[in-house]
Image 1 (spheres, rainbow, N blue to C red):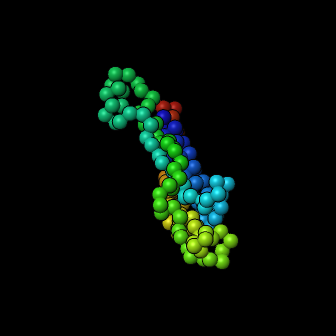
Image 2 (image 1 turned 90 degrees about the vertical axis):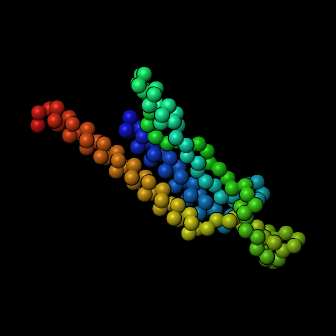
Image 3 (image 1 turned 120 degrees about the horizontal axis):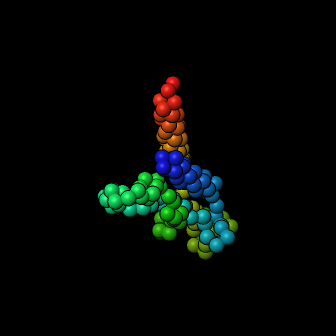
Length: 147
């Protein structure tokens, strides 16, 4: 079960890093297939299964595989707020509207890099937990083997 918890955490953080790198890559994208500037995306996580107390009471009755299922990506959310775009006055720009306003994605590359470092550290923490669990299992098998 610990393997699946660590694996779900690594998978979720990998998806988060993919979304963040996509945000950085499109920080200057003025026109997408939809005709608007790129909208920043964000990953929303959720803990699948029941709450802890519900899981604990269920586990007392029988073994329940939903205990400690880790994390999963619920959805990837686009920024649909009014702050999704930055308005810049540039009347000579080819994408300027009649008032000379150009809409650009409101993506701060520094913030995205901080989020990328955070996701990377969380991924590494899951790898460390997985390696620790493997070492504990190996030592337990050695104890059982008489070494």
